[in-house]
Image (cartoon, rainbow, N blue to C red; front, side, top):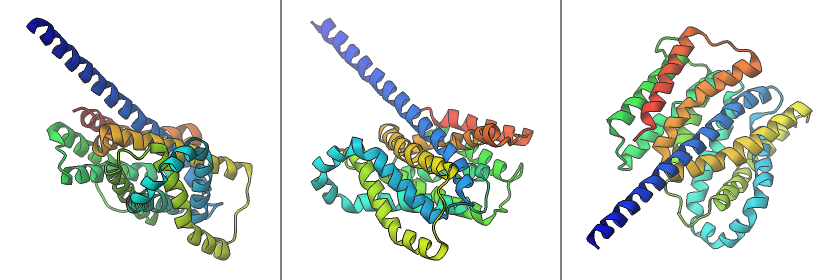
Length: 308
């Protein structure tokens, strides 16, 4: 009997370890999916900069995202309406940083900086995520800390074109604000009530985000006028509304709940590499030796930081 008990204990431990490894792998894949989709959104955002005012683009982004996710999330949100009311303060704060503020800053940055710079600078947000995690009592460990530092060095060298310098355009500064806002949102996700469904949370933040932006949208239309809907602008809005908002935010929120903001943030360091690849495929932008070296640093940091 003692032997059988020992076998059961070992078996249960192995099954639990396997489940944890499987969940961690799924979390990394979801974070990677969100990162790749968001990389494409920087190209689309840059493409919209000359045709759609930033606030108007962000407002319609969340209107489209709401329509996209509502058929899947409305029933859950209605069932959990009391829970949503009980945690409305937390949801409003997460919406402010992750939906309204973050994306407005990104679209504002698109007016005066390149898509590549947007992706590179956003890769700085995992450093802030890791700092938030450390302040919250999470141990990062020497390997993950070194990985973060290595990837951060790669980002700085990439932005500085081979040297560490701080000569940024106005759009670059807007992007640093966006990176801080996104990191704050990711840190807040750790406090999301476990009983609040992911789809219900997503739909509520999308609706609330559109409501937060509505006054600024009305002012923008009154002062700047509306924009002309063309196949190009409609396609880009659909991409950022459906894929970069509904799909990517669901994947990211789920990833953070599984592996934590700090570890998901390390995967997010792949953003500059993804943006550079898309820039080459869609815009014909070439990648030089310095950029390749910096990307190697970023990938090496990701590899170290993603492991426990």
